[in-house]
Length: 324
Image 1: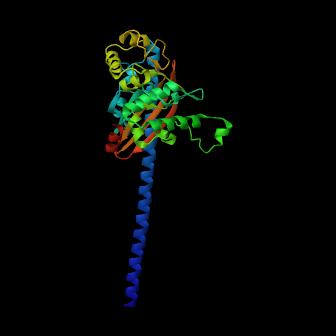
Image 2: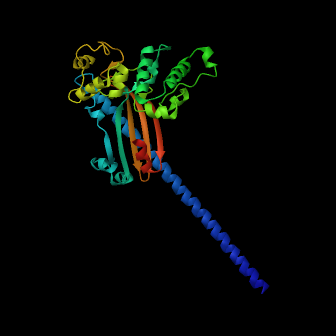
């Protein structure tokens, strides 16, 4: 009996060990497959989003080449958003693509748009040659009033931005000097609260150096704050450009009566053309959503990428909410 019991125990232990080793091997194999699939999806999304960015650069370059005038407005091809579309439909139209290549992106959907960043007020305009620009501070003050943001936060923003942009030796060793912001979210470093950032986000941006506001693409709120026009006059400009875009600032002035004191001839802070654009791309691969934002600078036919930001959202429903 003892021998039988020992043999039975040995057999049970052997089965348990074999099952343990088999489960470990199966888990290792499953983990390897998951890692390989994740890496493959990452590489695919990188190539697809890079291709989308190159396409956007081509659109902007061709717009500069083919434009009958130098103005940029919302009726041009670059301003038409790309609705979510299955990538396989694009590959199927290319006779050079194989069936395997089409199958690889069967469940990939791409959407995106190009946004004129000079339709927004540039925070870096608050400084000019290292000094505070009183005219731009007044413009931002009008915007703060429109959205109901606290005026004291504008003062903190201006002072901290001055410290961040001060490259003198004394300031670099000061503990008060924050890092210069590169995005709107980073303006929290300069003293803006989360609620104020949420109120200002639709109207402001952070661009290299000083920029002008494009009257052809800016909202009525941005135009009114930048030019000190009344909201009614700004809305008149927005409605009029829907019929025929402005080819010069003088076109807008004539619409307002030819001599609006708030927007004199040659005003330096408005224009009808743009150099900075943001490409917003969204790629949906199965249950994963990859979103990218890229800042482009266009000088003539040269379009260069200044910054790229990418993030992954596991739940497509949440990604759609975040985009609204």
